[in-house]
Length: 62
Image (cartoon, rainbow, N blue to C red; front, side, top):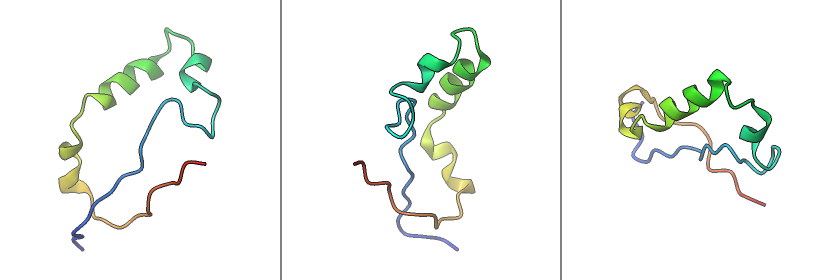
């Protein structure tokens, strides 16, 4: 099924529902930081051919 409008929820390391900055809770030499940097460098367009559509609307910030 192809959708005319594709939207993704914003991913941030400082999500308000988590501690103020979750990166501060992860040791600086932890591999999670490397993975985060790698994922952030991938252009969103790379994922679009594999996205089937659907999902939910954006999360409202409170």
